[in-house]
Length: 504
Image (cartoon, rainbow, N blue to C red; front, side, top):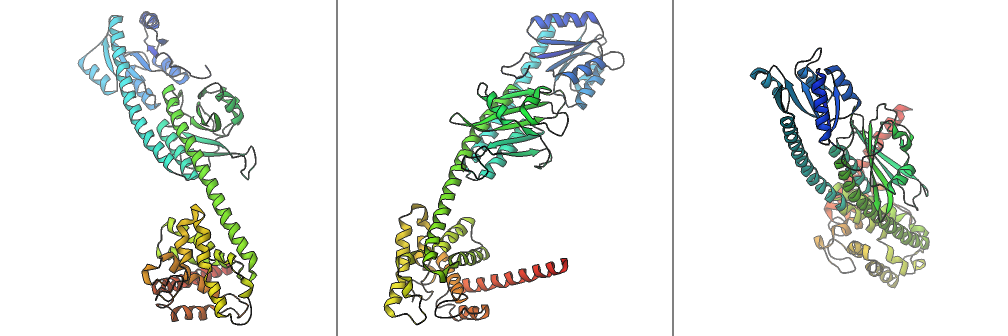
């Protein structure tokens, strides 16, 4: 059988050294709809257990070489999960207790009526079903929580990691992989695919072979999932796993609007094991939610890329007008983010600071910079014109919805801590923190860069100016943190240079 599409009949192994008992049980249970395999002793039973899976085992207690209790011990060592019913013609209270301690579901005395055996089997299977349903309920609850976490995340890497972790834990897989078709406009190319893996060791390096995604895609056109047993797995691998003994592969498609984005694949190296239809349905649910989460994350990444490209385009337009300030916005951004990190700002605040740093002078697009880039001192009228760049910057950014959050930082980055700045003359903590940070970063880079009317200051001279105007133009705390961050940066560079000198 290549795949499992509907629930198979219960498989029962009957072990007894008396042929008549084996034949009676085999005929009766087969008529009841069970799949029955018989073995004449414990050794033959173990060979059958190694060859194929079973749901239940009925075994005699007293047999030559390997008895019923020893057989149960071997089953336990192999990690096989199957119900066991013990039969014996020499029953005592002690042997019954011993059988139960070894994990037997029930204990039956010979001779017995086959109807009585059937009742015991039905009860055992009902118990097994209830236990499985309880496990499934827990799995569904766990899956619901994970799927909620996935759909609320917009980080593609985080989503992929959750899919791998959840698939591995919920299916008790030895390894899992996720094959993902890249987007058509991705740099890797039209048909590029990326495979993510997770193994028993939690590493991504174990060679799991290479899934033939084209073969899987053809399979998924007609079937909702794949369960394939060895050795028929070769057709779904362009390169087989280097680790030998792959016994079963379970795969479900990542599908959005009838388009297959990829597949989630669970590997089992356990002997005599196959994934169940219930596990396949579980993986289908997970893959469905995962595909939607991946699609959302990709849309968000595209939006972020458009956002970044827009900002870079705006900054490029600005710097093309003024060669003297080329690179200024990038340097201010780096300094501002350095201050923000030292102050312990959140990732969201640092991101806002980054965008505001890049765009803090965007309003200069609307003023005549040639009047300002002259060697002599600017006039009062020219200075008033220059001050308008904060107002123009606000007007430009307010018209772009996803940049509105950084408007206060850009608009107020020329305010002074004592209230004598512009455009509104607010002071102290009324000035947004991001604007106070940009004020220090902007002024420091301006002082340490060449201008048409003066040469760049040295770092010590610029720091002296920051200290001089701390409390008037600049927030004293921001100045203190900035100077500390510069010192730490110097120490780090010196240590790095020492290490490089020792290596060379």
